[in-house]
Length: 317
Image (cartoon, rainbow, N blue to C red):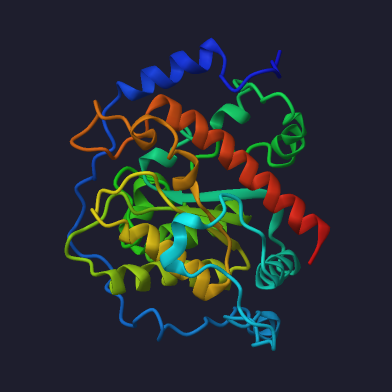
């Protein structure tokens, strides 16, 4: 039976999450050194064309046409002031509607990310009836029912040590599934296998010092391009940690969301009032892991995000 009067999960959930913290950490996995090198800068990457060719004419343009009204959006460099839950722009509706015409399942979402996005830590409680909805937010049950099965799904694009580069490397697709084709990237394989209408992109903790900000953005744009080509609406996300030292990965997420007129979940903003910014100082080599309170906050605000996006899409532009 579900409880509906506080933010804290059940004792079962607490035990499961605490046990998960004791499991081997979220350290990058040893993989072949070769990874796809971006051949274009972020501003040079073209909008991909759809296949089959009949769908080309239905693909929305990369950015909406200019309008006489001034752009009142907050700039990427002001990402810390962005709202936690985004208001969808017209382009998001175009992408989603295209996906529906192409047969994307409106009841399925996927996740692209590292180990902190594993169902063990993230969202599976909503499929496994291990949650407590806060008082006043019982309406979220409708979204839990709507996306039943997606919360506990283990995406082939979620893996220990996943980065923006490895999400584009076919080797990583073979780690989780024999169903992926030998030349298929994890992102493309997940889109094919799960047929999602939405995809949450949560990457950046496993940054590589050799990847410049420009290349990082180029990789991120390539992930977005694959999803858009398949009619999947990307939702980008900021992260709580600052492993890179200058929050440049959150800035990259905001930059791509801004340039591509895509929604961004500003998760970073949700944990700033928690001790140590929602990070666990005792686990790992640095502040890269979420604390228990950080995990609870992340699961709830992710559900609120998915609920808001679903309702906005259902209401139409």
